Amino acid sequence: MKIYGVIGWKNAGKTSLMDRLVADITARGLTVSTVKHVHHDVDLDQPGKDTHRHRMAGASEVILASAHRFALMHEHRGPEPRLTDILSRLTPVDLVLVEGYKRDAHAKIEVYRAETGHDLIQPTDPTTRAVATDAPLGPLSVPVLNLNDTRAVADFILAESGLLPQQFETVIVVDWSASAALSPARPCADAIWIGVTRDGQTTTTYHRSRHAAETFLTDLLDAEQAQGRRVLAGIDFAFGYPTGFAAALTGHSDPRAVWAWLNDHIVDGSDNQNNRFAVADQINARLGGEGPFWGHPQTARHSHLQPTKPARPAFPDRRLVETRVPSAQSVWKLYTAGSVGSQSLMGLPLIHRLSQRPDTAVWPFARPTTGLVIAEVYPSLLATAVKADPGPIKDQVQTSLLSRALWTLSHRNQLTPLFDTPDIAQEEGWILGASHHAVLESALK
Image (cartoon, rainbow, N blue to C red; front, side):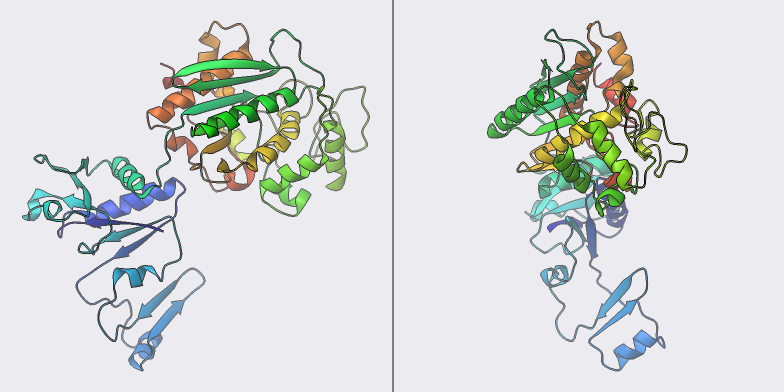
């Protein structure tokens, strides 16, 4: 666990800052616990209550437990315990914020207001790494932060603690395809395009098959990681399904189980010939017959895969994120325009294989703090910018612009809010940038 302190004189605003820091940092997906030191006696109990009677009878520790929380009361029958002793009792978390204990050796930030009538602590305390204040101060040997800018203070603490993700030096965006035949030799739309932005410069490449694209992508990732570059790879298909599907198919609600299952069942030839409709038919049969997958060529015949949407589907038609991005198609749709369902069936085995790489996180199912972060993207979030671009091939323009926008946001330190998701994303997945269309567009201006 990382430990960071918040110190200051009485009425300087320590507790108010602690409240805001906890809210900000937990909203980023990190876990936080707090410790507060006081100089008066501490007693959460009341005389006459059962637990108070237990203590008065001589119990060393008393736990008051309910369905929602428990409180542990420990009687000190000797010297006050050290902070390290207190911390050893905590369940491991990413960060423990400590209010008080200003004489201990952990790193701290001082909250300072001149109206307290006290001098700064920092000049005489080498463990104080910054001062957060709402008033002008003279030159100091440490950074001076705006006390009212919670995110800036949180960023400082997380950076000091090694918990603030570094910028992405390379951003890759892949526009995927479920085509059953090789794409034409001449670059065209509705094929696989890969956009790469590095050092502010963007390139795009065209790939005729999924095999060729995966080879290019893995070679690129090998080279980037060998150079120690931090990489964000965005891929354009759904990484998860509506709630309940993963457990119904695999017995586990973890989407990774679906990736592994598809990796074992999807057959994908070097010529793009594949068995996605047969696998969808098999899944429908396994889950009871009609749906959830639907759509196939009229010339095909499948026992459990219908050409049109089932009347009474077993699962929600859309993930929560797709209600935030209305133009996104249903993950169950396998045929005709916008058949993201086929792209996901043909892409999730790739995600399974990429997830096995070292120092890799597939977001939002893992925190985006690794050297390689893989995320679901939706290039149509930049529809306005794409429409204004003179490039003749829409897919090429989309991968170019989205990789540049994400790279720019990362280097402006504005990417973190895009990684905030509701809890349901742990099962269904999420589109990076959903509900942040304007932010993405602004990165291109």
